[in-house]
Length: 480
Image (cartoon, rainbow, N blue to C red; front, side, top):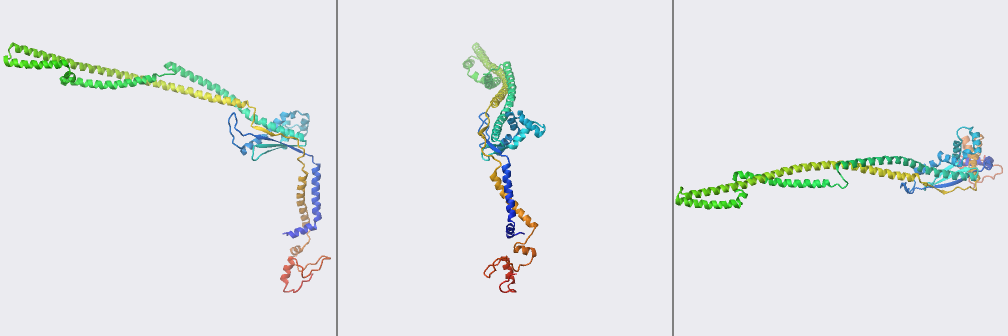
């Protein structure tokens, strides 16, 4: 391995090689930089607006994401933007450009594609890391051409961004226009079906028939319950007439029967007196007995009449119950039919409402797409316009000279080391030890050098050797 002392000794011995290589490198760099044609770089910048869209209310967030900014950079460097630059400036129609294209490509391909390739080589797009600003730089030999191309690319990018927003909106507008027609037809068909159904079933917009019929159904149910109770009571009273009709409330409370009972009681008492006094065969007794029988017959007839009214009332109540039950069943059937009709009408009404909501939604999307397709404002705005630069961007002579000094220094040192490896020489004590693998006993001074004195310090290698040999060689060492 080479020590730092050996490295410095090689550079001191071959300093002229180092200076020569370094000088040639710097001189060559300066000459080449002066001979190279000057190129100018013009820069324009745009800002991508991520505020809420006033038409579609689309919010992309407070700051642009790296993916969004990378997408914008890809759009700016795409062939579509470059082709728009070529078409906007009619460069493909320039005879000089077409002649140059013929000379360089031999007529292969298209002049537009050739120009796009040339433009993309000189275009540099750099997005800002912490903002939504994009810088567009173009390098050309002419400063005015560089500024014009940078501005042309910026304008083409703005137009392309607007087209990428408007063209899909126009396609969506045509699609939604067709959808509006279809949804309108579906809405009209649903409304016709609903109108025909309402007309066929006598349903109007404020139909309250179902409520009325439900009220009638509830009323008939109440009447039936009441009549069932009355009819049950009537039947029980009628059953009571066969077993103990004379103990019925109607019979007991009848004034005629009560009067007849009083008369029968008096007649029986009178008959009993006459029988006891005159005997059974006396004409008065026979007459009194006949009158008593007549009163009893009258009471029985009146009792039968009263009990017969209970039977008639029971029959009437039973008939009324049957009639109300039949009316209730008919009303229930009517209500069920009306509910079925109403449910079917509700289905048709829901179809109309769904068709109306679909039509309204498609109509709203059509209006939004129409507005977006007619917009003239893009979310990309020009921030700074490129101006012709006063100083060339290349060649940068100070930078080239600095780089040539650094690289020339490396080349000079490498050249010196290479020459040293090709012609290895002994330049210090370390080289002697490395070459002979023997200890150094002494060092001969250079011609004209001062003699070594005891007070003068020895080199480190010689000190180690002398310290190891001090028992055998006492005193001051001699120069070999």
